[in-house]
Image (cartoon, rainbow, N blue to C red; front, top):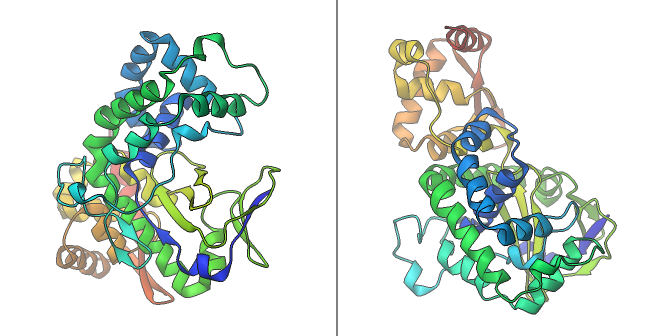
Amino acid sequence: MGWWQVNADTLAGSRFVLSPLAETFGSLKLLHAARGSHPGERAWLDAHLPAYRRLLADDPVTALLVRSGLGPEWIADFLTPTPRGTPTPQDTGGTSGTGGTSGTGGTGDGPHESFAVEVARVRDASPLDARAHLRLALRGAPLPAALDRDDLPRRAADLLTHVWTEAVLPYWPRRRRVLEADVVSRLALLSQGGWAAALDTLRPGTRWLGENRLQVNAHEYPPREISGAELFFVPITAQRHGWVSWEEPHRYAVVYPCSGALAGAGHGPRSVPGSLGALIGPARAGVLLLLGSPMSTSQLVAVTGQGLGSVGRHLRVLLDAGLVSRRRAGRSVLYHRSPAGEVLVRAVRAEP
């Protein structure tokens, strides 16, 4: 198994951050796999996979770059620069989706870098390093002759920019709310059970081993001493496994998938059956549909984009109607559909 040696000061200073580039790379991996794990991903693939395949069909070098860089055990490192979580001055006022100030850190809301700043690191990668990283991803197989060239970083950055512009940016405001909601839930878990509880549920292959050791994957790689470095935890909605990245010796990141109930909310508007919307109102029906898995009020606010007062009113009505139940988990109150709510949702979903 692969693990990192992490001292107490490094863990105490670690942060949750958002990364538009990580979200985009996760979406690229999803397009490459062409398999969605839930209806939201499958609908997103139906919308964007044909254009992605046409793009690669017209550019066989970039297609080969993708196939080589996304290895079964190792990703070419230059494709996944480590997020830094700190915006440059020109990014702090952006609101269009290419910049922004609404990332999330370990202690609450904070800025994240723009996609443009992050993808510039891919574009500026050394061609020599890019070819070396591809050889690692190929696990000993020779580098294809077509990839023995110096424009690989530019090609990778152009492809990521295409995926961001066409397939991620239109959904980014909603996905960002989903990511922020996931961080809220992780921080709640951290406050209730400590770092061991938070890390053990982060992603498959990640767990706290004790003795200052953080297992980051199930592969047999040599341990890394990262004490004194910056450590980031980065949620994504696309892709079910995540990855790790680093810029030795300064910063390391664990990219992990959002929890299941939240991940499905990041790939476009949730369809509300017309009859259910007519019965209890579209916004309230949307809240009821989200509560197939327990969620807190703050998570619902983040995912739906509705105000705290509106979500609170919807929950009170649904509670009074017996359609949802609630339970306390540590300091949080979690809401979920009651048996009556499940019957109602199943009935409207079964309508022709």
